[in-house]
Structure formats: C-alpha cells, structure tokens
Image (cartoon, rainbow, N blue to C red; front, top):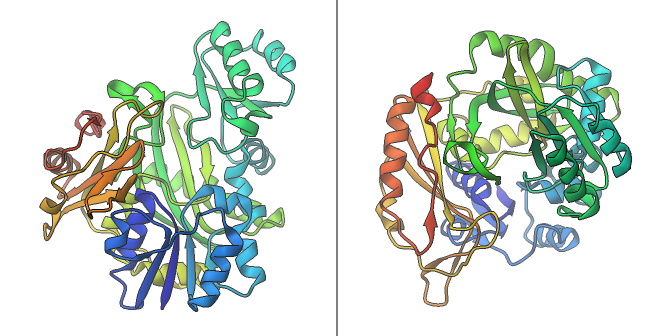
Length: 424
C-alpha cells in the first residue's frame, strides 16, 4: 500500500511511526510533515488545507489510503473532496466532523439523545450572554463554539472574569470566528480522562484510556495549551466507569450521528469528566488527540493500517483491538513562552540517543531540518518524549530521564506530568 498522512505534528509523527511497522505499508508520504517524520516518510510540501493539491498528489502517486490527522482539514471538508474524486480516505466527512467543529452542535446532540454532559446555554449575542451570567453559579466555563487549537475554553471564577471572557471570545475575537457563538456551561469537578475510539459508521471500538495535561505550568496553572504531556492508561478509568460509558455514551454517540444523517467514520475522541454523579462528556474531538496519540499507539498491538481500512470499509466489527499490558508517559518539550510568544530556529541535540532504545520514543511536533541537515525547533511544542514501562510510575521515571538526553535553547517542560499517578 501507498499511504499519505496529512499533518505536521507529534500526532502525525506517531501515526506515521505506527504505520511504518505495517507489512502493508510499502511507501508512506506525509504532507507537510516535519523534521522527524521525514526519517520515516517522504515529506511533501503541500499544506494541510490545500485540499485540491493534496487530492491531485494522491492521484498522481496512486495513493491507496490517505489518513487525515488534523481537525482543521476534517472540519473544512477534505474527506468530501477526496471521496468525490474516488480516493480512499480515513476520517469523518464535513457533516460528521461538526461533532468537534461546533461545541453548540455537540451539546445539542447530547441533550437530544440523553448523553450525559454538563448543563449549558448557547449565545450568539454578547449582551444576552452577560445577562445570563448575572444569575449564574460560579465557577463557570465559557467555550468558543468553533475550533481554537484546544485553547478556546475559559474557566471563570467570578462574574467579572466571566464578563471579561465574553469580551475576549465574542468582541475581541481572540479566536477569530470560533467565538461568534459561545457555549456557557456548568463547571464540573472530578478527574479528566481521554478515551479514543475507532468508528466505521455503525461499530465503535474503544482504545485504551489516557489523561492529558493542558495547562502550561506545573500544578495545572497558566494558560491552556494544545497539551503539555499525557499518560496511559488512566488509573481512574475503572471497569465500572468503562461499563457506564459503553452503555450511556460511546455507542449512543455513534447511533445519534447516524440518526442525524451524519454517519461518522474515523476517530472519536471522548473527553470525559469523572464526576461524583458519574462520567460526563466534556467534549468530542473528531481525530486522534495530541499528545494522547503518542502514548496510545506505542501500546497498541494491532496493525494500524488494518484498523484504518476496516473503518473505511465498514468492517470494524471484525477487528479486536489489543493493547500491551503496560503503561506510557509522554512529556512535551516546548519553547519557553509557549503558548504565547516564543523564539524558534534553535538547533536540537541529543536526538540520536533514542536510536535503537526499546521503550523510548521521541515524536517531533514543531521541528524542521536546516540547510546543513541539523534538526531545528520550529514551533511552540517541539518534541514529545515518550517512554513505556511495566506500570505508570516506571514509565514516568523513564520519560523524565529521557527528557535530559535532549537540549536546545529555551527548552521548557512541565515537571509534574503524571503526578496524579502517585496519588491514585
């Protein structure tokens, strides 16, 4: 098979790395890719939003399967473009990717089909939003309706903070048109858990659980980011929680999308809050999480190409997902100043230390290759350093050990990724 992966981050590096292990994968391309991906795949200088160029490339190279890693192209309709030209592609169509593309849509879907989530209201008028806040309970959560790189969520402790949040999202347009409509929802407390799943339109197969750390600084302080690290499995995702979610959330979501004429094929990422009253859905994503992918795929036993094809062909019911009885931890090495202002273009040293080491992985998120072949920093999140171990404590120890092998100017990381493990 010839495979094209669309995207350029740590998630896509992990996908390419896993696909490269498949006997089916004779040639892998990645558009646009990054400095690490190009060691496993041929990188192509086409942007993820250049749908027609990507489709033309897939035809020219006789690509057998294209895998869409990112949310923007999925919500923009790249799958529809590929399918209209007779190309096989893994990911939801535009009318199904709305599950992630619109917070208001997903909340309304959950309400209509009885899928447990936080109470909420939707607003398109900032004045009406502020009026509602006058009578609301605090803390409260404000969410931009559209895509905002995982950062369009504000937790507000006071009325003043919430009113400032409405201004930020709806009037100042910090996240552009994503804030034209906002969801104001009840603040839930509990443990957060991420659960990824494969879906073929009818059947859903659950992967192993994970837990992300979104805030920039230790102790879950600082600004929201795309993710500063993650671990898998979550010790808080018990058999009891799993049974509840299978009955009340997972299949019900797939069936709801079908009932709405929005058949979903691809990945559904369930962001869950384990409250005192049971699990609640915080959000849906329509693709692999980043950096969750970097801890889930190293634990997966299946041939990823087989699973992708089963989703496209509607034969996922014939696949049994299998995961190693181990654990993984990923620590993101970022550019100091992320997610706001940061410098890039610094040489990275120590990457060769990972060569041939079992249980240790480094996934490139924001890197590029310089003219002299040196790998340089090229983003806010630079690398995802991942390690596996017999349990979470061992994996965490190994991941932090491995972060010391790498150096670059303005390197920054959280020091408490997976600390909750010690409290479990």
